[in-house]
Length: 511
Ligand code: KIV
Ligand code: ZN
Image 1 (cartoon, protein in one colour):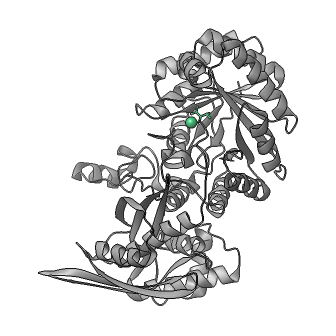
Image 2: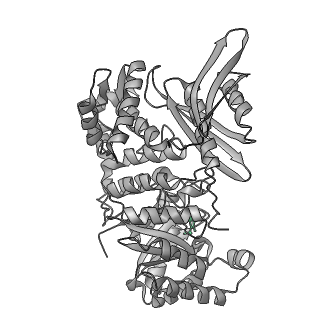
């Protein structure tokens, strides 16, 4: 048994299937680079046949990532596999991941295929994929509800056709840990050529068991886990990368394998994904939640002061929480900023990009006394995420609140370079601002979610706002951050409108 556990990150593919988590090509590239820095073994960058946008994104990731294998998803169909092969042409190491459902309900009701036809199609898919790369992964979708005898038959056949990784998905999150671990062991023992492939698992979190099921599978011989940052993913999400990695690393007394992950990159990756997708991390989320290492009870605090191991099983700094929290202030110059950014492993594509961040830093320092690492990460996300060619831009705004008077907001926007202004009343300053924006843009969108989170503590903290808009069957999340949450809200609203404007169509891979 290998002592290496392969980490296959699917944040950019299954993670992107969370409603509203669609990412642009540039956003995918930024996350992919962070995953590479974290030493993820395989990055599933998308589903190239789903849309031209996704094809371009997978191609862009394949062209720039060198340390990790880049993977593209494809249904067991010739055209999907061809698109995946084309998108991955520039990859130093490219993998095609092809799948077809094997559970009775999926075969009969969704695919309208007999089991024999499914086996035949699976073998064809792997054979087509092998024309593009030696690194082919096969998934029997809904394996958690498939007949083990049938799984053995399909998997033996696809290994013969050249699949090197067999990924066993619990697509609907139905399995329990002892069952799922047992299934992996059974497959490994019963499939005659099982030793010619690596067993992988891909668990969904509908019953909150995705990580437990994945770990049970590892204890039973799986050597690849598919997971996502912050557990993002379809419905209740996928197994959280940070939880799988830290469970295996922390319990080396139980696991006989370990990952190559640089765990100090986990918190920066979590923040980046949360900020790009607009899915905030819950405070008590394991490893990456703001409270994950905070001891509140006096008895705990006392114990930790005497010996941290009394209540801490991991060190916060080992997963990327910075020990030195207060970093910079109003008088810090360019060198101090550059140095702190380098310590945070943040690099800049050009001097122009750094200058943009420095300007944002100075503006923020005028309004906020102490600038923390979290603020710096948010500034970079804002700078890199803002595109000068964005159609909708905030030129200026004013909002007025007074007890007993309806709040009113006035906004000046630039639309494709042309300035427009409007004023509106509203139930509160944010409502008035959104209504004023709508008076100009007439987007016809539906506001599905509005949330504000403070990036750091204190009343002068920046508020990070997420706005989710739906239009014509598409859902997008926009983000904005500012010490003034009404301004942050306007930025978030315009960010969402710009994403809709960019018209990133994509299809659901499992439809
Ligand atoms: O959940 C699932 O079954 C999937 C497959 C495409 C692996 O995401
Ligand atoms: Zn999935």
